[in-house]
Length: 283
Image 1: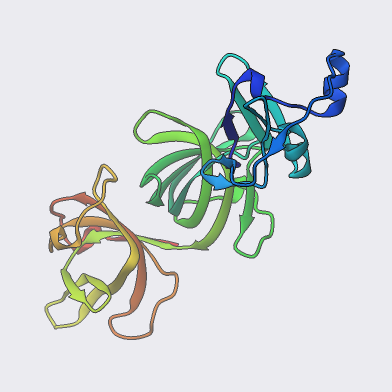
Image 2: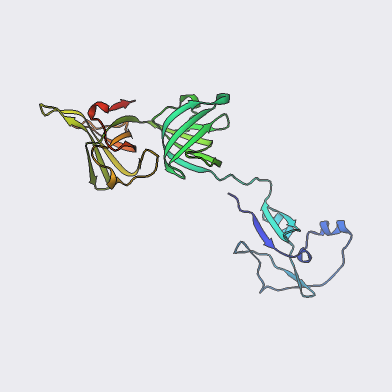
């Protein structure tokens, strides 16, 4: 966001341009002294402005200096403050950000869509409204239709600056960058192991003849998000075998046995599950 510079001055200490002074009809020739040992700072930073001392009073040609630097000057008589802001430009909005996956997409009024997103950012869970003012692109910068958004898609979104004080929060999406379509699997965790640089989450069971049924190993890195049923962060050390989860992973998978794939987001659904028949994979 562009800064608004503020100088605390007195009304008697303001000296505008010659044209401004002429308009008042109060021009009087005076003599003054410029002291090079006196500096003027704005927001803690030094400036090149040099005050003119006339009868012991310091004066600053602030308007001329501001225009030379590309700023506009305005005086707040109530607070006795001189405000400098960029000429011809509005202050940029400061947006919040989330990077994760889409849980659900619903149609909204006026052709808009509501996006239920989870991941990392200013919030782990947010409901976003995307409308005609939302800029949606794919990872290559091509335009992407809001109606083509689907559950499981990766996204990076900027939203706000207003966010409803609810849980999850709700806000307008200013921009969305759509990534890959992940795979979704709901299943019971078979095993969890700490590995160099992350964790491995294993699914699947052994049949009576020793074969592996529905086996899959997901690799979690530092960017992987682990959330509970309320979409609050969970420590990996607290994830135990027998926990039912929903995994957003892939779409890349190795051809090894069992296949392995990168894990993006893992949501804990309950403490225990019913077994391998609870699994489901969605493209």
